Image (tube, rainbow, N blue to C red; front, side):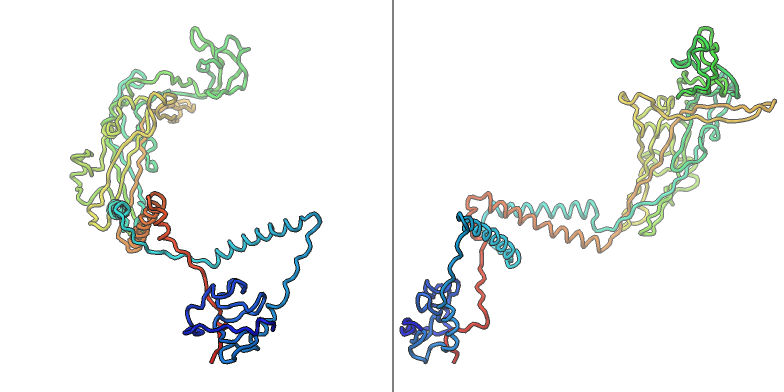
Length: 494
């Protein structure tokens, strides 16, 4: 040891090796940085405990100093000279590059160390402020009202739900009579105007028609338009079929009327002329027809079934009732005129060109109540748009034919272009029943929402209050890790 070892360090009175005043900063400024309980003996001397006794590194009383054998390695390591820095590269570039790399590496290591070895824990700070307190309670009250009023009362968040499975059948009744020069006196019943007799959740009732009688396969002039009018056979092309043609052109030009000539076609003759649509509608009395709608529903999750003909409806009542939203809201028989009027439409106008009506049946059932409260609700609306913005190809129509053989065995048919109203019957519904799982989930979600009040109040306190810096100082506290190794000793162990 050097001369510094012969100088003793006196222990202050009352200071023991385990005294709490031994901490960071007790050592000399020349001692190793970050090692609080040590004091340097010389410029590069060995580190010693703060209270080594009256002796020094190499001398003094042996009564209160650390064992020499334990201090020798530390003294030897401290006495070694520091390595000389390597010479910089030519031009000094090495001296500039090394610190930049070390700084980047140190920043990455610091970020990684902070991610791995830092821990955040909430700190409760009681702030006595009327503004913040009122904001906190107002937000909590709003969340409580949302959870109780909307989630549980309105949306019934305590229930398990299931969607409806349904089937629909229909039956139409009604008879009308017409008298025309072309058809004469004729009675129309269900078999004539319901096409097809049954559909899948849909029903079509014919209200107007263009009829072409006794068509047979043969040659006849085409209807006149800009592609079929001709002056001679040179204007016609054999085999030509246009988009709107009624048949195949033969290449000849024939007289269609006294003043018009058109190309000859091979088709069902005479061809249909659909330019003259009957007004008012041919079957204008169809507004008095009635529709019986039979709807069966099933909620598979709860094994619950129901039908729109309720148990309280008797056979006598069913034969006489007509649906009315006020007097007979559960009668399953509907008059066509009332359906159209309930949708805000006029039947006689709609019957000319046809249209599409929607009959909606809603089954919203609370199965926590009696089954008698699970009843259908009917609404009506027109599904095809009929207004000033939708004037091209309005309404609903299609063609069908009835075939037969005449007395000579020739195939003939009657072609009908039918206009009418299609009724689409749509069933919606949802059933709910109490279940503990959705109840607990919604309660937990509601409690979690109360954290929003804390976040909002923190934002107000830390960013908008006048004393925000003071509150921020009180809210956040940074604690360093001064944990010591278990194998380190201080002073003598007697």
